[in-house]
Image (tube, rainbow, N blue to C red; front, side, top):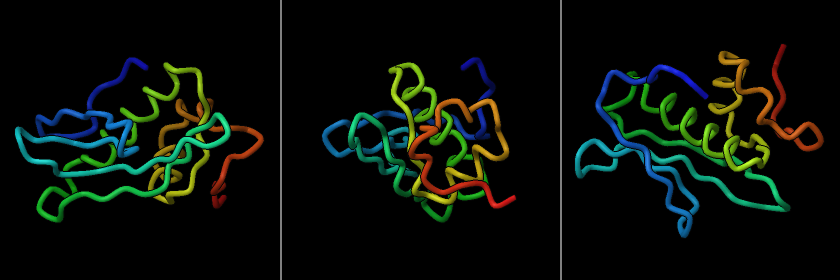
Length: 110
């Protein structure tokens, strides 16, 4: 998707298919990780963690957006296990189409 960055830091997000993570890098330092698992043809987004000194800088938003963009580009769908990912999609409905309609995982609390 065409979007602005969510973070105020100059980070790079890289996918590690062996570890099943998307990692946020600030130079040589990994400052955040989104853990996923490929299962039954979809991507389950399990959890996200950002180093404490980099929290509140939009790192989780950038990680989630990058992961969702990657999944959308691949044609796969997402099952949401992580409540932070659910909150992000609730706040950014343009990503709702990436969620697997048959197995969405955590649903909106509205």
